Length: 362
Ligand SMILES: *Cc1c(COP(=O)(O)O)cnc(C)c1O
Image (cartoon, rainbow, N blue to C red; front, side, top):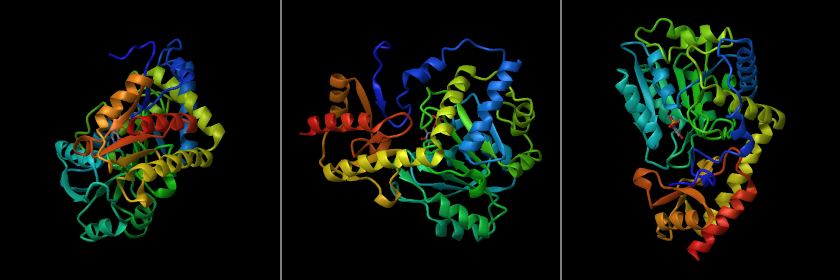
C-alpha cells in the first residue's frame, strides 16, 4: 500500500500529481454552504472559470466525477424520440455511447479505429441524414493520447448544422488545450478536476449553453441530482443544488487564481511545450501510438515498439523513485504506455521521469 506520508509522484493520466499548496487548500476550515462566505467563494470561482473557458454562459460546479456529466448531458438535453450521434475513437468515447444508451437515448455510433481521429467530414456525412438532435465528442481521448480536431468539427457544425447540440467530454483536455466555449458553439462541456486542474478527484466543472438549458426545461424525467434547471436556479444565488464538496471548491478557486494570472494562452503553450518534449523522447526511443498531428498535448501514449515489459518498468520506477506512470488502457496494455504532462507537472519533473525510464530500458 502507498505510504500516505510519502505519496508517489503521479504521471498517470489521472489523477495527476497535486502540489502541496493545493493540498493545503483542501484542509481549510469548512463553511456553511448557504452562507455569505460560501456564496463569495462560489461566485468568484465561477467568474474565473468563465474567463478561463471563454464563456458568458453557465458554469456549474458538480460534486461528482465527470462521468456524471456524461449522463447529465443526455438526460437533460435529449428528448424522448430524438437520436444522438455518439462519436467514438477510444475507451472513453465508446463508454459515453454506452452510458447514453443506458439513459434510454436512441444512440447511433460513429466509430473510428483506436488511435485515429474523428474527422469533420465523417460527422458531416452522418448529420446530412437530418436524423440527429445532438452529437457527442471527446476532445482528448485519454486511452489513446489523441486530440480530436474539435475546432474544425465545431466550425463545420456551426456552418452546416447550427441546430444540432454539441456535447463535449474535455475531461483530460480542459485548461491544457485551447478551449473557447462560446466561440466553438458547444452546448455542454465538462472535466473532472483530477486531470489538468491538478486537484484530487471527486469533483467536476461543467459548462452549459443557454440553449441547452432552455431545451432541458422541456425534457421529461431529468431526475434531480444532475438537473441543469435546478443547478441554474441555485447558481443564481451563487450556490449549488445540494451540499457541495467545499474543500474541492477551495482548491479549484486557488488553481483558477493561478490560471487567470498566468493567462490561458500561456497555460496552453506550457502544455504544448511539455508535450513536445515528451513526444521527441518517445519518437527517439519508441514511437507514438497515434499520428503526430493528433497527438495530445496533455498526455502521450507511447507505442511499445521495443517490446519492453511495461508493467515491470513501471514497477521498477515506482520502487526506486516512488513515481508512477501509466500502462496502456485496457486492450492497449503493454502495447502502449502513457505519460501525463498536464496541470502542475513541470518540465523538470518530466526530465527526471524520462531519465528513470531510460535507465530501466538501457
Ligand atoms: C478520466 C476521464 C473520464 C472519466 O472521468 P471520471 O472522473 O472518472 O468520471 C472521462 N473521459 C475522459 C476523456 C477521461 O480522461
